[in-house]
Image (cartoon, rainbow, N blue to C red; front, side):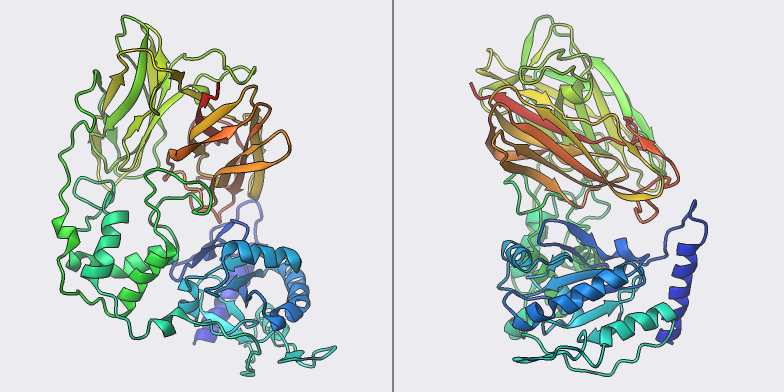
Length: 581
């Protein structure tokens, strides 16, 4: 039966791929077993992105393994030939001793041409039972079930290798898929290096809810999953977590949650609520062990959240925005409001706090000057009214923006501000009326807290195209310190990163968001500002996916250009800085 299902699904995929190219359709996919991993170079791969392929082929790699190194030419040859026939190839490293940098070094030394997925906490190794390197695992593209596992061929053995293979197991399996035939699995044993499994080390250790799991949830999840929070359900006690455990495992394996999207190896940010893979592993292992409750207190039931009020005391000025009505469903265009602060004199702003009227629907807001700056101290180009006049962002549980000590934003007498509101429907009509609190300096601060936003406004993204690379950049004319960043794209955005290219050609990565999602955009505030010398380029690199493989895409048949509405596109690297002098 499984073979029949596989053959029928393959035929459907073929028909989809070879029918009307002008109007391709998305491939049905339950998104179960939708594994997601970073690769050694910082790329991000969620397996459902490749559900339009014939199959997903994984080859287990391990640093220093001689059979992997000697088998590399065989794998590379097959990957080159069969990628052109519609297969997706990866290496995967599940060794606990190999970190991302070490894998990247091995890849460079031995000239890998295929991305290496990094699984050193063995979330995927557990799911696919990876125990040895040099093994090939071929997955069905939509169910992620294993359809072949074994060696590439019979050319290699321990301390022995032939000039030519007499059996070509992987090639035969891929040809069978192409021909819609049953894969003849000869049950050959893979020769490789043993992968030491954490599950073996942990076999006598039982995780429990009260000691190991509840504290993780309290630190990383409850800021949104609480009463009055952004999330659709509340993490309130053990029984609730047990009830949601299947979904929790699913979103952890696919890295859809928590929605902190920055690459954990780049930048050190305030308010970071990302979940380390090691903690994700603890939660998944606890679920698989039957979810023992433990004997300690339920941390989630002891949490007390302060009433919704101003965190920094009563603001100097409070603005109540106009009420917005949010429909039950469908995407909603950005909403804009303009207002005055009734300033009777020039004023220095030291911070902004936002209290959403309805946190479940108000996803984020961007506050800017309506007219604002007409010139910049670090660039001679014309400033753009919206992007180069960014003041503050409110998103998720972090709804306050206070500028670094002894800095401020200058507001002119009588100035108007403009706010962009991004709403997400929740299944029923809702209303929101948000309040914004403004905190002023009593005296002029030492430094001006400036905004600037390299933006590309001249690009075109053709219909039905993926991995379209676009860049934006500004060359700075003075030494600066960079304090915060917000990478920004819309629904076709796939990945984005911001870096400093120094005058000597060096590169300083600031933030990378390889799994960009328009619904989860954050202001990334650096714990320590980063110095960028005069003559540096603030460089923004974005990758866009305008195909049906992008589940966020409103319409893959349209040519896309710059525009401020979410159905258009943007590539912008918002950042805030102070002058170094």
